[in-house]
Image 1: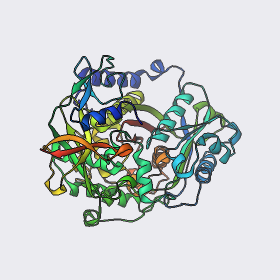
Image 2: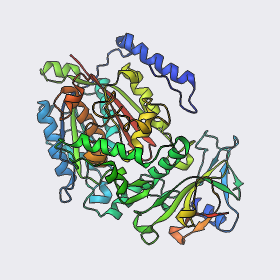
Image 3: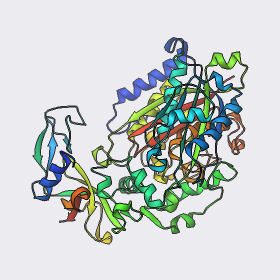
Image 4: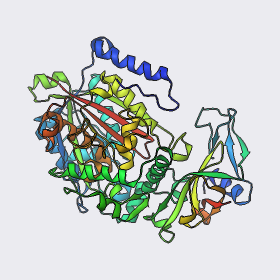
Length: 422
Length: 120
């Protein structure tokens, strides 16, 4: 059991979360009476990549129908669509995308768009999980879509920047890569490490994407490739950054009783959900190289599921930049602060390591269609736990997976725990 | 026009920079109705210290369209005690380092005005 305390966090709070997790482990029925964990009945993804002429409704139709088909669920049974999208107004002059997406998959039910920057479908997932758990619904579609490559690089950079504080960050020249570069530089200053360590993360995630038919970059790179690439925002280069991506993701969540009644093959459940928040602007936070929102989300999700970090077999984390993977793993308590930077280089998080991270290829190599990313992590983990993922052979005994989705410079974060069930 | 933000920049530009301070000594930037750190509603304008230190900086090579002619340029977060600011550093990138002392002023014009730092 890891019980690291982060700066500014009381031992009491950490312990109380641990106790809560332990209590739900022992007495889940008593703690969550009447609640059943939603089952992931089906998942669907488009290819993540450059599809500039495809509308988000077109992309979501492909992912949503794939998920419904995978689930074997009648669209008429779907009671709601929970959909994540970040920049639809900018990229395709389209707000109010919820109903459009329900139509796109032939569902006649209320549909809502959730927006929390890059965590948009992570928060959509969280709301759907809660609704199924609370008995509000038996069948929900969750997902997200983003169309990005119809804009040029400068336009996309501007669109992504609106996830930061416009008055005090963006006007001062801060871009999104720039913001993560500030976090990386602060991390190096505080803990050591350097660009070579970050390059190992990019190399790992590219290697993981080989064979992933959904991934934008299905090819390996070398440390030298990463170090020699052009700078985006120092110390981050092109290979430290996720690409600009079009794509969509979807999943069908059902109650345990619906799965039983319809004899669905739905052996993966979402057993924990957590969300954390932080100040919007980096300069308003206590420290630049920590992500307490991820810590809070993980504490809540792990306690909810009754697990500890030691129980986790595989993780998908939000590596929009290589440094973000480090901050995510430390924030969630898998590594002490200052130690996550070496995890990829030391082989701990590679596919044959103790904790394989981003077996999908991560945002780095699989791609990052912003609003689709949170649910795409759910889709990848579900496949990994079911055993039908291109990297399943590396985690054949995996029972517990964790998804970490972050918005902005982690002013929003969600963590979800997935577990195999009988 | 952005009430509060414009006033902040006007003051900083004229050499009378300030931040908002709550009864518990936390700093924040306007417009604020409550302290974002503790929720205190008793906010007053406190003079911004003349000197801050760079907590972190980056050299931006891929800019937004607004800064297309500036790149590469340095953007940094500087610590002024109770409050920190984000701004461009008006210095050659080779000469900038974490821990450097800077003063804050205003660069750009009208809607593109923003905080800038100059080495001290």
